[in-house]
Image 1 (cartoon, helix red, strand yellow):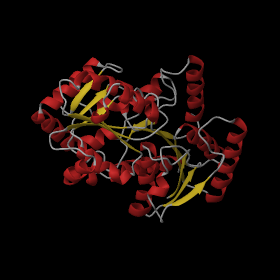
Image 2: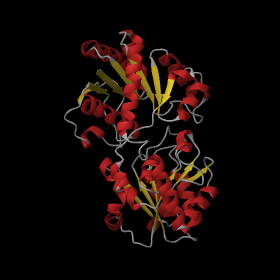
Image 3: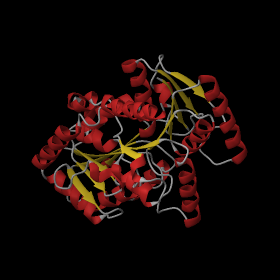
Length: 387
């Protein structure tokens, strides 16, 4: 097949890693001709394509394809996408992210590309927006949904959200979990002692990790509040935050104000290949975001044999099985968050049992090869229907 993937930006993030693996698998496993079209990569999250050198992946950057809504820039991006698709003449156009999804689907539909697929990594509308903003994004998604043949959700919860908002009927969606290279996480324990020494951690410390950008709605403030409650009971607890962003300075100030410096380690932005070692250094993963399709950190931790504590948002319940692989809590709840973390700090056997259950249950399901096989089957089905 001749396949074009379109995404707004290739930062270091879950949707981007998903897209990269999908592109590379299509080239390496199936011999497909794949082009990745992306906007410029800007921001504190880091540049995935600079970190991961992929000589067999053709990449085209479209400068006006940016995340912010700027009508005249968006029209330029649409025209450039349309010209590129006219030149490439793909069998399949697969779009990702809100802006890339809307403009990419519009351009491909205008050219009657035989297979147009969009992946919903996370809905652009959510309860924390103003009502006019939410209605605007829903209207945009409804319009774009009519300009593709099928939609892929990274979690059943994303399909439910889209169907409830009447973006498209349920039969237009298929859930395909976001794939990753699982082997480094299965072997994460091999680097545990070395990584903990590098971080200044001793064998007596119980490490509670969080992997997320330091941005609004990611929930770091709730973890910090929970830490304040449980530190006196568990002085051995250490909180390891992996990621960077606009709120870092604010959180560092709060940590100093609460005199919690010795209990917190903020690593800043890390290369993707460093993440398995950092997960291996953890004993528990906490996920306190208020919106997320299905955070990759959850299956990554479980595949590494670590229990998770998560707010019950979007796709989290599909991997956090309450009482089996971790604890699932109401969003924004602080005391239950502190209590759940405390129960795992106090019980090494419970941590081990939950982690082992998660590893057995999810390792094969989240292999990137499994993801790409299912995605390519969707391409083939649409193309057969198109004759």
